[in-house]
Length: 145
Image 1 (cartoon, rainbow, N blue to C red):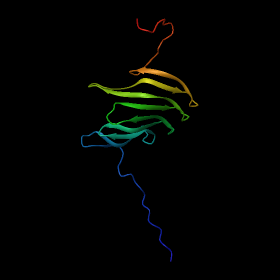
Image 2: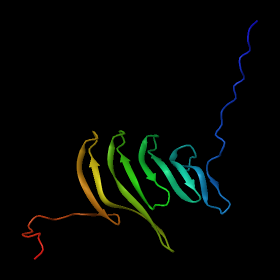
Image 3: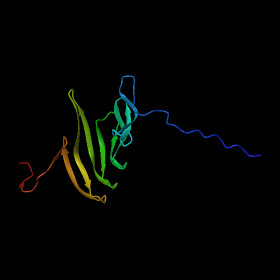
Image 4: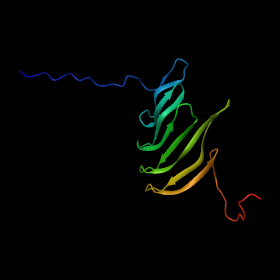
């Protein structure tokens, strides 16, 4: 007597993406697409309106363009940007500052920059999103008087 094959149900994630909580804040898994509704731009999770965990951003061909790592309760987060060949291009910290009028996203601190082969090239320093060039050449005395 042959045994019957078990019936396999198609597994489905229990939560639909792009949902809101009771206070109308983004909550749960979110996916954002181009206007064609098939090209994924970014995906990640919200917890009551705040980005949490790993957010992935994509090139139009579906390869990773950027990853952000968000910690609960922090406006600062790690950013990794990738070349179109998949190698790390640069990484550093960013933050979001919200005012009554707008939301400002910017890089800060030291960022490491890599060539297309993924090898370290140099460092860059940012303040409020602007790259700062430190000119130490020509200074005679760096010691206080």
